[in-house]
Length: 296
Image (cartoon, rainbow, N blue to C red; front, side):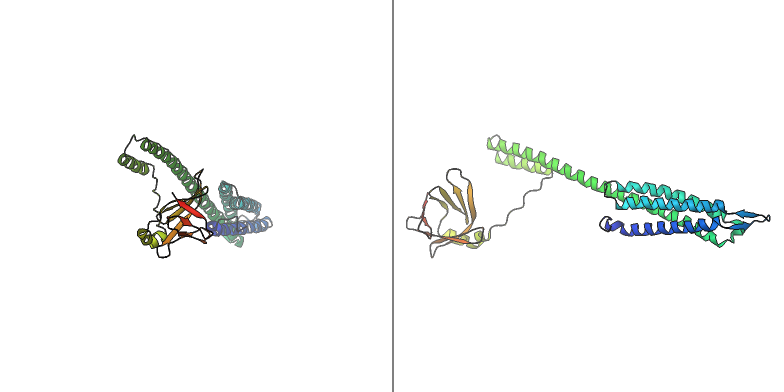
């Protein structure tokens, strides 16, 4: 049951259920006592409390059914379950009316009958639960509208993002066709991104190998394209790419370092293993197995 109730409504659920239970019990007790009580009126005749007892029993059943509606509004998994609390609100109002008439009927003999306390307490409980049920209904409706507003905002953001992407794509085609200049492209791109609230991609941090070993690449230029059978190895700015010669499809990529003292290029694979290639006198790369990657 705890998993069915949202944490923010657990206390409200416990208080409401406890009050409904107490009100129902007190109403039944009050009705039972009044059905069996005869009071001598000021005119000397006996007056039965059948009317007051009936009102108390009616109020007890009203609270009992109100409790059932309250449980449905808290425990069901439907999206609009809070609407069941409208039944609780209606029944609490009727319960308060029933218990009020029962308390008035108990006012015989100048209110000296001790049982009058029970319908008064039940009337107060009915009014309190009437207010709590309204509070729960308002809170749930507020939460529902907030969720709908967030969903609408997300959908609107997606639509704007899609429209912006389409316009950026069209703008890029104009640039590729040399219809607009680079400066015009940059200006229009900035306006489109602002208009459609498109956040620019964060700049990627420079690979550690590039920062740490850029000095080696300045000493001896090993950047270039190397070929072995149908595989191309491209070295550029401390990054390497293996590609298929025919399809140009990427096969493997990562970072590398160049050791000018040993004339060795070390490739760092994604699985954290290393591949070392030496430089021969013709500037070709040679694997540890003796395979030669010819420089193009």
